[in-house]
Image (tube, rainbow, N blue to C red):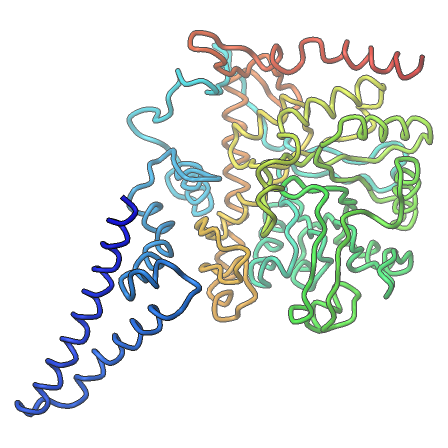
Length: 522
């Protein structure tokens, strides 16, 4: 069998050479005896040159075995995502978001028809199907109630936040026109815009409320040696646009993974925003240097609260080792320092770039993490002190209601907001060649974003999603998001069995945590 394949490959290569040489000889004949312009020889000469290069190179075996023809493999591979999305993908296909999910964001952002015809396309009998139980006594939910006050008794400047906000996306990862559109949209819709850990740029300062995220690189509040700077933090935290401060411990898409800003991307503009030297390579370590344990973390949070004159301060975490989070909660009890909020980022959260092993195989899913964090805080009696924000594939009213039922007080959306800007899920975020100008610094691409139009779409997406949420929870018999209970959500776990979220996630949870607490005190 091997010898037959070798023979077939050899014959194919010889045929390609023979046909190309024949084409060249034919061209020579036509030029010599039929007065055909000599330029026609350029085509067979170019083809022959490509075949020669393919045959004698050693990097790509498919091109060496099948000169010229083998190049078609790379052509087809390059257009495969587009062909799948536009010609073969079904309504419920596509990852990480299917076509139906993307379409509803586009429709809401454009204020277009948001209804579906004929019937459901999902299979309600499949294992894993989730649904909500409606009430025959529906209520009318008021969208004006869709806000939550963040800031406990230790906070001097509590913030009234929308229950849906723009998740962390830095300038640098996103273009200046994308960030500007998001912030202007946040201002129009009266919701908050998380800066991401890349610092506060001028494009964030377009009037929208900001949640300033601080990561391990301390961008915007760092000394030249990379350590945290009290002075720079206090200066920027005093901006009136900054309503809350979020300390990033870990991110769902790449928990425990640092970052690298190459020197060529560290322009004077980026360097000014991030308080670093331009044209130098800057590392974001995987761990913070301002603290090294849970007790020090609490004192650092208290330090940030004091330096910001009492603005709400919290931290973002993707749950990994549960004992470490319990240790943080115990540190709260010991120091009596309570963060104003905790952002729970699910493993399904997005990112511009991360290793496959981190994206696919690390971190706890959002549903499990919300239940764990909320239950733990309740066990220690401090749930009322700490608000919970949820992040991770949240774009629809169902996603929001589900997060609230599992313990969230408010939510973030990153990719939903990107879809409202026009993201087509090209999966090119890490290439710098985002075709719609969102995740790129290429001026030729990002100038295609019309800020006036896109900011309105961001605001529309938020407004129409809030309207959809009010109708959804009203149909379930609730007037406010905080009233939603896990008992009205169900998941098919077997061919003929549905289990409520109350049964799946909360049965025995508090008892288990109480047992652990008693053991730790023993």
